[in-house]
Amino acid sequence: MNTLIVYTHPNPTSFNHAILDNISEGLKKAGHDVRIKDLYKENFDPVLHAEDLAKLQTGDIPERIGKQQEDLLWAEGLVFIYPLWWFDRPAMLKGWFDLVLTNGLAFEYSDKGVRGLLKHKKALVIITAGGSKQYFIDTDALQLIHRPVTDGTLSFCGINDVTHRIYYDVANLSDDERADILKESAILGETFAD
Ligand SMILES: Cc1cc2nc3c(=O)[nH]c(=O)nc-3n(C[C@H](O)[C@H](O)[C@H](O)COP(=O)(O)O)c2cc1C
Picture 1: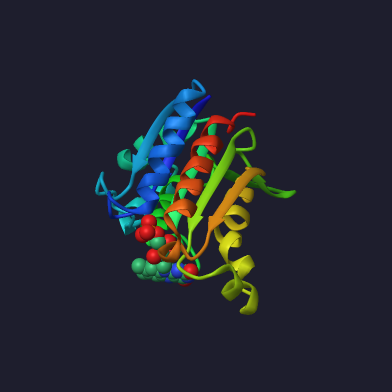
Picture 2: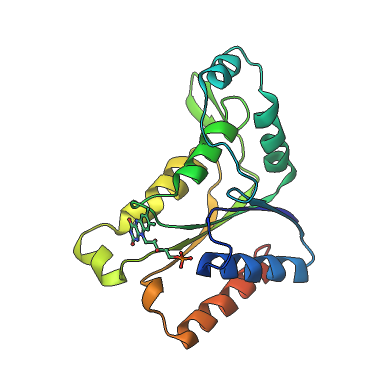
């Protein structure tokens, strides 16, 4: 399966990066073709500029958006790895969605309402959080974690086959807990197509 990993973290020595390494190894071990989009490393410009929007509104795809969309269309599987920032994805990843998931490619409007056009893709969403699980339960904030990406974005575009994992309290994990998460990441990669 062609799999695109969209990875968003500025620090190459982060826990998120270790998760990236393990998932991509697992995917490759299972025989998938893997492309990694490391948004910070490639200095991705996440801003949907006025000229981009003006072109999109006339049906003209700006070259830099078209290049990102080639990777999206190539992929049957999508993996997103990111830290929870303000109960949502980092702005860099939000910008990637703003630019890439365009009307006509990712969804369309018809007289029956919105139709997602990416329904044959599957996704894996991996999120790390600074807060503890108990904090999210106590503040009724659990749904904030999944709604922006899984419901608000992927499902809107027709991607309903979504697996997600959230790892809480990551700054306070023991070495064993970290090792277990990395082991699980490799397994998630290996079994992604199952
Ligand atoms: C800008 C920013 C916003 C953050 N917002 C949240 C948040 O809303 N909820 C939360 O639990 N953690 C939040 N955190 C903590 C990060 O999620 C946490 O540091 C990260 O998942 C740790 O992964 P890493 O070790 O790979 O950096 C935030 C951190 C930053 C830098």
